[in-house]
Amino acid sequence: MPSTGLQELQSSCRRDPDSYRTEFLTQYGQFQALVASTELRPSMESKQLENLSSFMAHVSSAYPVEGRKVAEYHIRLLKEYGASMHHDLRRSLVKSTTIMYRKDAISIESMVPVLFQLLSVRDKELRKSISASIISSLQHANRKHRNEAVVKSLQKFMYKTIEGADVALVKRSVGLSIELFRRQIWCDEKTANVIGSAVFHPSPEVMIIAARFVLDSEQKPRGDGDENEDEGGSDDESDNDTGDGSSSKRAKEMWKVGTKSMV
Image 1 (cartoon, one colour):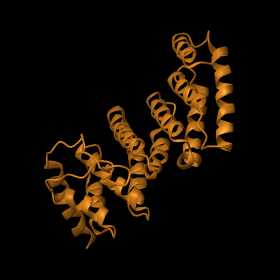
Image 2 (cartoon, rainbow, N blue to C red; image 1 turned 45 degrees about the horizontal axis):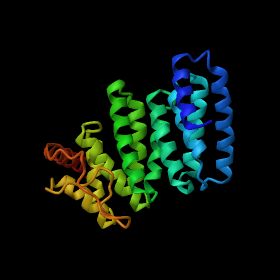
Image 3 (cartoon, rainbow, N blue to C red; image 1 turned 90 degrees about the vertical axis):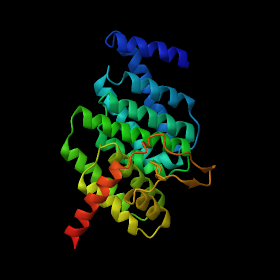
């Protein structure tokens, strides 16, 4: 079905789900077939799947049972084939996944680890989009209902990544932790200590990102951990940077407490 036809059907399905269920199921079957095809050749471009992915994401709340299954398909594709997938399709699936999170078709603890792993992909536009999505999703989750068990699970994942061998992911994990601290989404002592511990990381790039924050340098690190990439030079200063050093000062105080307790 042409994209204009899908947009019209999307509006109809959201307005009257029961009356358009048959039409929805037809597109759902087509979506499943395209997913199977993509699993065989993930590097191939698929505008059809891009369009159907967006359609399914936007109507997922109208058909919650199928919507959750669609979300599972997205997570599986991104987890297993995200790194080798065609860049346009990958970006589309990421966008649809974040939409389905907002529509409660997928949990944040299922979404964040999968999106985070894609931060190692050499696609600057994708990385910026994922970083912004993770931050906004965690902020949304905190505002909606802060589930401490979920928060601890996600923090454990992020902190484990900082201890990993993939320097690119370590940089972005530290950068995201810093941004989450600055926005007071994760502003506890443990987060400050984890950021501070990155000062001793063997990678100079990671060490500098953490040291700038802990020492409250005038030059703030980026939220996604990207500084000098081969894909087009240095990025502009983060739009999310408030220029306020209060969060860094609070982090230093927490870090001192934490390091003393570790002695």
